[in-house]
Image (cartoon, rainbow, N blue to C red; front, side, top):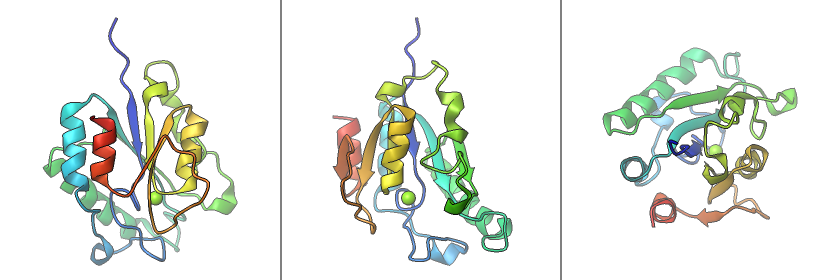
Length: 176
Ligand SMILES: [Mg+2]
């Protein structure tokens, strides 16, 4: 029997690219990647068989608050840049609801991710990599583990399998 693949559910803002104070990256001028993120994502991809799944809340995407034509050029640039360095995501899930919508697709809800819970994947050995308490809650809701990347939020009472300040730490944890 073929081994079930585990998954890395990877947050975008604050994990792949730097979060901004207004929590919105609508112009390429505001975009910067985290230090070493592409280098270590590539190494993890080369040395493991994790599926790479991006999961991101983008509050109000598609509304006048955050129009599609502001979001997608930046998102597509991120994806293109990663793919150019051989970091291809197997899937990308972006929720556009505001927190006040209480929509099941918005992290920590798992509405967008139920297709991974059908027994085809090794969820128990999968991780959410995120920089907020809601990412750790998402891991709990999925039944997988969490890697918490310290961030500008410095949330307290984080119960993650591993906490680190940088991608080197994540790499060394996943590829000991
Ligand atoms: Mg984040």
